[in-house]
Length: 228
Length: 199
Image 1 (cartoon, rainbow over the protein chains, first blue to last red):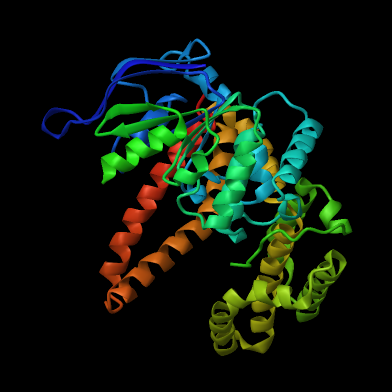
Image 2: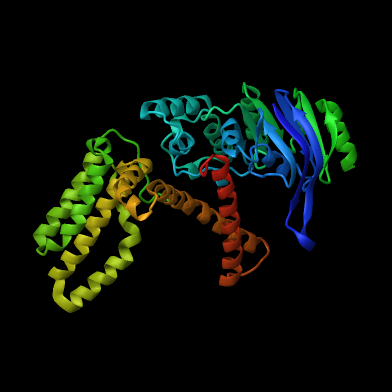
């Protein structure tokens, strides 16, 4: 359960101050939550609030009762985060090493690390690439690797900021299929509206405000209207 | 970008612990100045080539490891032929070539993570002077990972210039490349934070 209450967030100060979120309150306990909105509407900042990457100027964010302001570390263990550009979030030279990276300093034995890495690579169809350099993967495979590296740490929630924006339709579908199978709570920011089919709830952001909140078809219709 | 990348395998060299290979490399480097006869250098080169054969690395891949060095070796050889004759030139060039090929053989048969683990372990004594070995290891890994990324960014910038019909101006190339690299660094930092590096 993620509780966002009365959150306002401002970047910069003085004359250059820019309010990117304005008095947003929402409680998310659904299994699948989608977030849509125009570029610059505040949805990426909202996503970053959920794992404490951004601590709000005002208001609080609680993840399973933990405050992101004071318990960022525990929050990040619970909330996995996946970025738009997989190249920026793959931090290790080879596929296997990148997946293993998230398991460092967790007190796991070498064997445990090895078996968890192997298992997750198998699940994402990357087992045959284990020793390959990450930069030789295709765009879709890189995003799957990024997802695998997040999921290997077994977070209870996963937040994704436009994970399919750089992908073609087939790879976007592939990533979406993997997301669909997750047991975790998924919060998905996306411009691919068709991926929200079957979601429990969709939030629409516009000009720093949460302007609509409802089932996907209704929310997507509201979003289309506001963009027309 | 095929230089010195790990090639999976099950040979004796692949299975040897990373520290032993690094130690061998260190010893070879430190003792290389003892070689001053052509036959000694020839045997050293032969030993390295034999190592490639044992590791099952194809000759083509081996030659590729030496290719970036060709011009330097040619210049060194030229200088030594003029200054001190063929024999000396062969010794100097041969030793350089053998060491580079040996270093490449180590990285071809050892996973980067295993090499980094050894370096991190060897740096542990530096803890007393305030060095965090884990952090240095992470730094090295990020550096290795960033090479292909920055090469990719450079290609993007060049393509963007061509698309707008601009010629090759060093400044028009360097400025966007630096900006893109800095933006990439920002994103990378965010990703590291999200994965709990500083927690």
